[in-house]
Figure 1: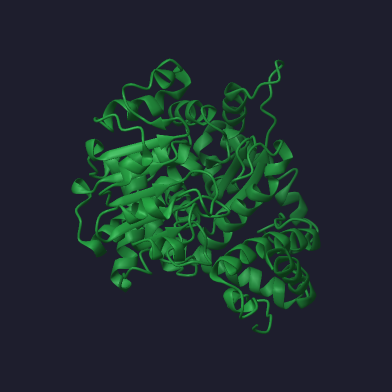
Figure 2: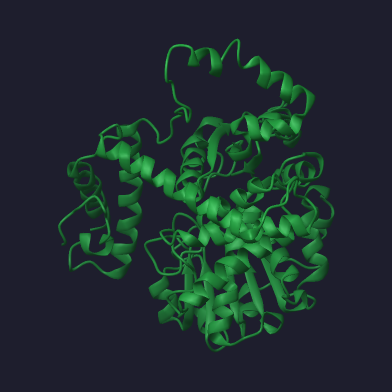
Length: 484
C-alpha cells in the first residue's frame, strides 16, 4: 500500500497488494463516496459567493448600491441587452434540476440534487471560468406527479437574470419536453447536460476511437445499451455527424427500439424515442446478444454494473471492438474485464480509468463559448463543433487505445472548445455579438487561469481550509473493510 497524500494521484496503489482488480475497482468507488461525504461535511458544501468588485472607501457602497446603481437600472430598462455588460449575466449560468434522476440513484427529492448541482457549478468555474448557481426545484403538481410544465415555467421566469441555463438530472420522458420547449421559447441558451452534454463528449470519444481502429463512422455498426435521455441524444448527434441509422440498434429495458414498439408509439411523451424507432434497427432485433454479434461499437448508458454488460457479448463483437461503458458511478463492465473479453478500446465515465468520457470535458467550454457571444441557443451544430474540438485536441497530442480523450487537467482544450462553439454560434446566426476566434480563446484561457489563481490564493491564505490525512484514512478503511 502506498502512503496517502491529498493529491490522491495513486488511487490504485492505496489498496493492499493482494487485492484483485475487481476488489480495487469496487474499493475505489466506495472510497470516493465515503470521502465525498466527509469532505462535503467538512466544508459545508463546495460553493460560495464573493464579490468581484472592490471597496476603496465608504462612498463605494453608494456606487455599488443606492443611489448610484439607479443609473444601471434605468439603462437596462431602456436596453435589456445592456444587462450582459452591466451585470454578471454574461458569465452566469443557472444549474436547474428537479433531482428526479441523480446519477445512478434515481429520484433523490428536490434538495437531494444539490451536491451534484454545486459540483456542476464548481467545475464550470474551475474548468471554464464560468459562474454557476445551483437551483434544485420542486416539480410536483397537486396530483403528486412530477410536472414538466412547472420546470418550464420556472426557467422562463429566471432567464432575465442568467446568460444560460444548464438542465440536469431530470428524468425521462419529462426531460424531452422541458429541453425542446425551452430551447425554442427562451431567449438564452438552454442546455441539457445529461443529454446534449453526454452526446457531445461521447461523439468526441467515438471520433478518435474510430480513427484509431480505422473504421469510418458511416460504416460502423453501433449498438446502444440503454435508451434514456443520454443515449437517445448520443444516437441523434452521431447520426447528425455522419453515422448511418440503419447500422444502429438501441435497447431499453423492454428490448430493441424499432417500428414494432407500439408501447413507445402510443405514448406521445416519448416522441424522441419513437423517432429513433423509425430510423434505426430495420431488422427489428430484440435480443441484445444477437445485436452485439459483429458490432463495431457498444455505447452503454444503462444501469450501473459491473455485470450489466456480459463479457460474452463483447467477445462476439467485430475485430478491434470499441466499448463505452459509461454508467455512473460503476460502469456496466469494468475496463479490465471488457479487455479480457476482447475489446480493443474501452472508455468509462470515471477519471480513475483511462479514457474518461465525462460531461466535464464538454459543458464548461460549450457554455463559455455560448456566453462569450451572448448566444440565444445552443444548436446541434454547436455541440458537434465542440465534440470535434475535443477530439482534434487529443489527436494532435497523439491518440492511442488508452488516450482517446483529453483529461480535465488539459486546460487549453476548454478554450479551443469555447472558441469553436462561439464561431459556430455566429455561423448559425444565434449570436447577439460577433467576435474573433482568437478573442474568445484568449478570454476563456485568461478566465480559467484567473479562477485557479484565486483558488490557489484562498488555499494559500487558508481561507479554504485544508483537510487532514485522517479524512482519507477513514474513507479508505471503510472501503478496504467493505471489499475484503
